[in-house]
Length: 252
Image (cartoon, rainbow, N blue to C red; front, side):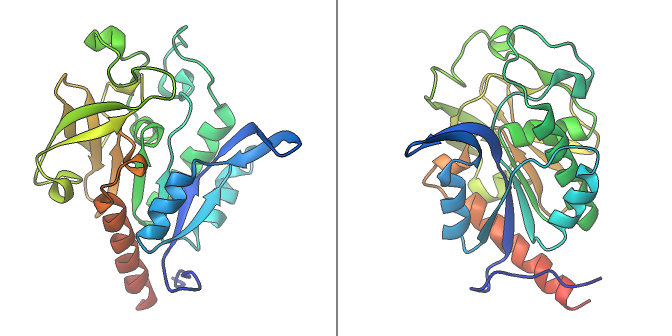
């Protein structure tokens, strides 16, 4: 097995899935690859080298995803629009909007390639849901119907502070402690749990807020947005795990 490369500064290369959206800057309004810069900042502050991974759709996406993952040391699946319900065997309800089937296909291919290479994976919000769907799980399409409130996404562009209880012997609770308050922005959440996943954190209303893939050192999905938080321990741990994996592969 060939060794993975690292950035010029010696930091591990961290792929971050990006959006394909119509965006405006200066005098332009065009189709663009975009990502909230908080993801880039968090990876860079932790010592990683951010590599943006915009959707590459079409029938060659699995091959392209494998080639994309090959030089990387870890993968971050970023937040974003709802996952297309047919991906988890459900009919699309009116509350599910702005799906991006091309992005779903690309990120599922990235995740499969990352798991095949056994590199660390951090799924954030949509990314946690994608991890669950990839493992055969399903989603609640509109969380307020299940829990009776909209506190996880209180208003457009407003994060909802959410208190969660974490399992101290699993990720991410082993890093963050038994109870913390986190910034949430989601109206969907894990329903049926995917194969090999365990629930490692819940909101006080019972909503699944973190999952971990068993048998892997660092494959974690968190339903909240750690990139919006001042607590950088989760990103620090991701970069540390990426460094360990890169060092081990260099010795092979």
